[in-house]
Image (cartoon, rainbow, N blue to C red; front, top):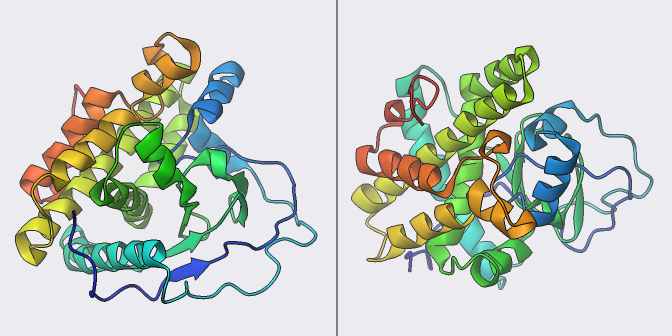
Length: 289
């Protein structure tokens, strides 16, 4: 397992667990953990979860997120793990992003339970982890880690670290202006299938960015143990659109993919991991993804 205990954590973790939220319209997320129920709804309504995140305007909610958010308790081991992994991503991307012509600003990571009010709208735990570009925050209900292990067959701490690194990858895309361009492309798309294809390339690039981060964890920090990368690859494979669709509806519809197949997600994570270079993550310039 990844060696994280006793290491410095990030100051950018907000703990909203246990806070009450108003129940407005719930959104589907554009994050790594779009679960079977959300995928099924997306298929039935022909809506891209990324479209929903970018277009839904949050309505004021009475009693939303009552009380101030604070840092997780010092004795909360799982939250401390999240904090350390987030700090590692901060260090890696602070180093790498200037080489791409941008400066890195740290995102905040919000821990929540059951439901949360984000700048992209209301979301519940069924959405899974997601990134909201409007407030530059990653949202995580840690019950997803249990689902990742028990429901999707991807146990282990580094599988969880991959989840965080993927969502931070979306933050990197936002800082580079990639997310905004993809939204424009989706809005101008001639068909739903074409819009979905842009979403797939965005998600696969975030997988590749997660692989870049893993490379630096291994070669610079030396905190990855044997088998950790296999755990990340298993996580990427477990949440491919083809596997999720097979679970949700018993069949696979490639033109409705929004995140990529299991094979694609594994391949692009591995591409970033093997190179350690974010310039190797040009999923938009690649003819075949």
